[in-house]
Image 1 (tube, rainbow, N blue to C red):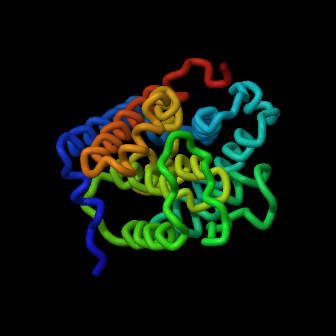
Image 2 (spheres, helix red, strand yellow):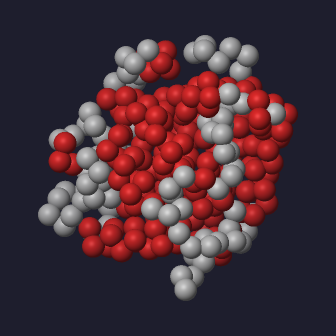
Image 3 (cartoon, rainbow, N blue to C red):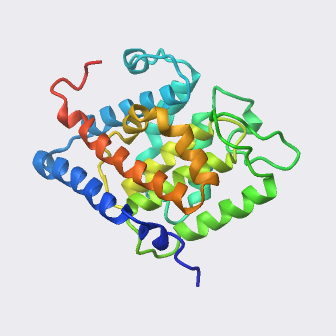
Length: 263
């Protein structure tokens, strides 16, 4: 039996209460607006706003209006491309996570590299990508494979940890391991969103956690750096930050915006 690796992380000081508060923020949004009244247009708008924010965090200069018109740069185009399949991929994240991540990469990186790199996990013969500024050196391919496989096993096993904690760990592991030749940040943030959808935090995808990450962008590289090398304190701080991101994502939902088609 695979050990529940997520549960101890959910028990770190302050994490459990922060996760409950973040979930409450999402629940209030859905309850107040009426979950059954959420249309596909609202989900599409939230995913679009998330794609724009995620691309901006990766360095895209494209505005939300440009992204909406399909006139964004390759980073934003890849982020938008992922939104078209995200809800379907979320249904598979607890059974076939590696396949989900590789598909996300195929979508995210279609305009960023050669075709033979799409959905391709790096090997020992390939250079380690450096597409998230400020992180320590990515682990070699064999270590990356071992940790990625362990993460996948953990995702397909039962856990008592809050879903927000699971999503945050998935995000951080993919960002730190950098398993792909390109677009690891885009994939990591989309993978986090998949878990939030799949595990019932935001099943209709009307929050915008990527906007939370962007608003707290100054602590994004340092948070991942501390997660990677700061021991349990660094992990706890990343999880607390992630809870804040989820709560911010609820505030930035199109359900809270009177004119969803605006900038």
